[in-house]
Image (cartoon, rainbow, N blue to C red):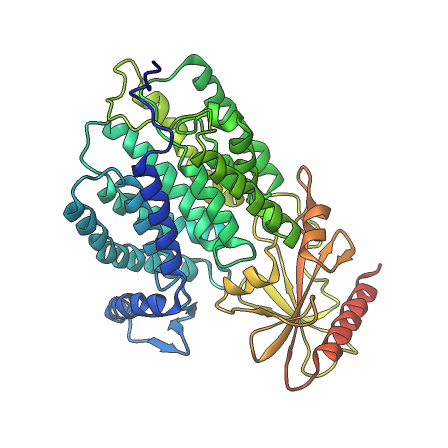
Length: 473
């Protein structure tokens, strides 16, 4: 008779409950009514504290004005992303909790904890912008400020257990990093497919009770991989890199077909196109089928074992600091950037957010041409992500290259080493490589009332063509 391994179960009820709970948390956080409700808790506290330091504080059309600093009160500033991360961490870390009262009490406490952490984060952002005015922080540094306040607050989520508190702390640090990287991508193209892949990956992550020499070797090889990722500046690689950290990832599962494919689907680049999204969902369906058919070679351990006494905690804790790299790499590593600033021969004015508004001789009235310089070594985001970061939500139109916020038409281009590129996917291909310049993001804008989408598309091509003529030596 086969006796099951007491340290393993094929698909533990605790893990299944945790996965389903994460899905519910992400779904609730996507509802605008939930976002508005949490914003009504967070915004008055932020404004009240700011008014204690200055009388020149106001809010108009969801923008906070504090001296020379403007802060769009978006979903992120409202603290919804922080709340989402804290709830997800609490659900996941406490999925083994036997007492439902303790579980729901901890979950409820995350709401005031998120308000406090978000208030500290917004004040940190304002302080940084006052110091660096008129430049704003890079997207990675923006999310780092949130992560900075998230980690100490999330320690409240660690459950009482016979397991090593050190091991659970590293699991929490890993989970917080993964979900912090995932959360801002949830509202972008393919966000739900990406989330499904990440949740499946997390379901197979657990801090082991002992470390073999092979695992330690792979841990330091994993650290070395961070340097080419940071140097090249492909931000999408950070999420799968964190997912496969040998501190918590199981090599047996990663080497299985399901583990390899799920890790591949946890890279945001895969979800950029409809074909990529379809492939990702096929991978996810295959992995779920494997999970429930007991086909995984890896069995997720649910034992409450203490950390092996021979394990050196400082030796393992130091590599865990690498989880900060996805937020700080673009600040630490800067790529060679050529022609990031518009030529002095062009008429331009500085705008907030590392950009310029250009005015060309034959540019139609009402048409704006925006020039955004790169932030550190980071590649430019796609138009919808770039503007969402600035508090503007775009929708697709019948013309694939034209998007709208309801009042304006938008179209993007990229200028890379003297070449004009008109799609974000082609831009990523063009800038892929060692120390490649991230180039310039060009955005053409026009009020909808002035032009039809066809006329705007034609005008955008003409004005960027004129820009290229002006840039020729």
